[in-house]
Amino acid sequence: WLNTNQPISLAVNAPRSQVFDIAKSLFEKSALVVYTVGSTDREKEAPPALTCQARPQEAEVFGEFPPRKDLRVFTKYPVIVPSSTPSYDTTYDKNYLESLSVLDLNLHPGDNGLRYIQMLIPDIDNAATCGFCIELFNYILDVTSHNPKRGFGTSRTAIWGIQRPPILHDIRTVIRCNDKNAFNDLVPTLLPFYATNAREQVELSVHPENDNLLEKLQDHNIDSAVKCVLEDDSSFEERMIANGDNYYNIVEVEEYKDNYPLVGQFLSLYFPLGHIKSTMSDDNEFIEFFEKSDKWLQIHQDEEEMKKTSFWG
Image (tube, rainbow, N blue to C red; front, side, top):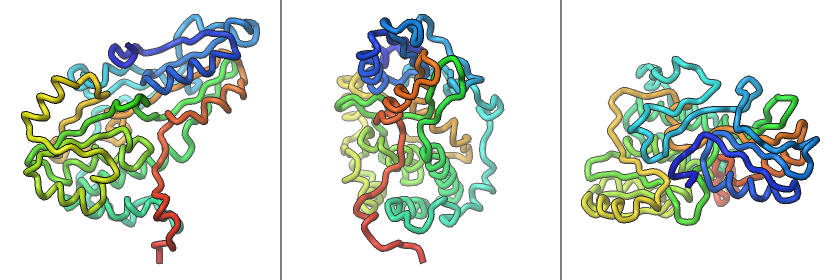
């Protein structure tokens, strides 16, 4: 119900010994912006969560997301508070993006686990799209370097950050590529999944006659890293009509036409973000429990590559 109707917030109350497990299960299986955790047996220090409010000035990130599959019907981007209002209608200068190269990736000696990124992005033959993907990856690397982050309110305790889609068995985001979509068109949408712990939550649907794209997917072993389905347009449409409820999001790849949004807004199209808080002030037990949740977005490190000698130098 939470994922179908997408309310803004959820309050969870139970005895303190039980409420963390209940709230964690709901947090990991949904994608709301605001979660509040209270108790029913320690009301003086951890009162019940009777409202679902947020204080953005204390890093209690607030916002509104339509149901994910219908997002484009209602809005250009989800609304997040606090955020820069002009950023919602801002795009990158094409000349800036074209000036970026693989050397601008924020990788360091010893980052063998991210070698797959260094191999993937230079294979994009459109210079502006390549530059956009460099910006996008650097942003993902930055926001996941310390994720979640702690709020700075004094009367209650919050952690916030960008998250994976709901962690539900066999519920994925499907990315559809028709017979004409190029590798350049796909990578910006695929990259946030492929480069993170959300890669198991994405499925590629590719037209079987798109030989160039299929060859690229095989060259980078993407077809073995994420679930891939070969199907023509009518088969895809029939499958979505029959089984669309089993997908968190359905994304049809579009050609980029020199219109590259800011990467923060772009990422919000596919990934939830927001905060979860305890009604108790300085609740370190809450922090220690919820910061370990698998819901928080993290960068994917290739374990086999990490064992190899550094590719730098």
